[in-house]
Amino acid sequence: MIDLYTAPTPNGWKASVALEELGLSYTVHAIDLMSGAQRAPGFLAINPNGRIPAIVDHDADDFAVFESGAILIYLAEKTGQLMPTDAKGRSRVMQWLMFQMGGVGPMMGQANVFHRYFPEKIQPVIDRYQGETARLFGVLDRHLAEHAWLAADYSIADIANWCWVRTHGWSGVGVETFPHLQRWMAEIAARPAAQAGIKIPYDLDALMAANRNSADDFAKKARTLVNTGANTAAAD
Image (tube, rainbow, N blue to C red; front, side, top):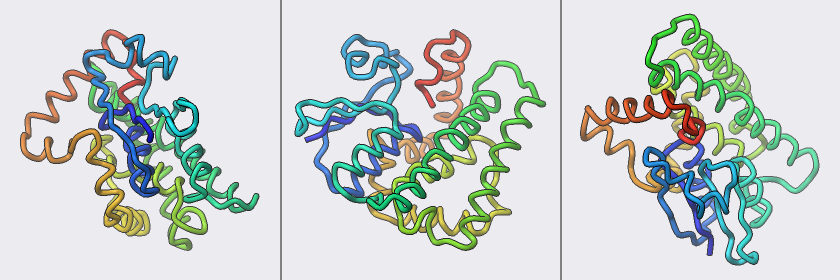
């Protein structure tokens, strides 16, 4: 059994989608980022960095893993799924996973901060991060024009990138000019495990759709974190 500590964010969904794809039993512990639960001593004992997601694998002597990319690699290696074992195949998956960890996630995260949360609208900064996000989408689109998935088969690299790219609207970046990216997004969105994983710890999309004020409320609360500098990265 695995304990998953998470919140409804792209990084959190990476772990829950993977757990669903792998069919592993897990218990969800929702972490309320706005109340500062990620800074509680109990959670910091699992992840000293105070960010979600984190897991504790009770089948492996209560082994704790933090950082979403590290969790994906751990789960893939634990099960022998969603990542090849041969050196070249594994490397291809790792390259595209790192592409998300070092590019897509940080650029979209900063676009979110300055487009949605920051109290002042600094247009050159917004343009910078939205432009870089669009450039990265173009890299994905060109690759997906010749490949069904980011690596040879569906893998943790697809999960990691999709969980972020699917939120492109929140970052203020369109995907209309990226047909191959759209095809890939739709194929992953149709997977039952992906549909289940993005509803963990609760269905944020349904909440936003049901209440048009929810997006504004969320942005206002996140803005408070930005203003205080209180672990803003925990809300990525």
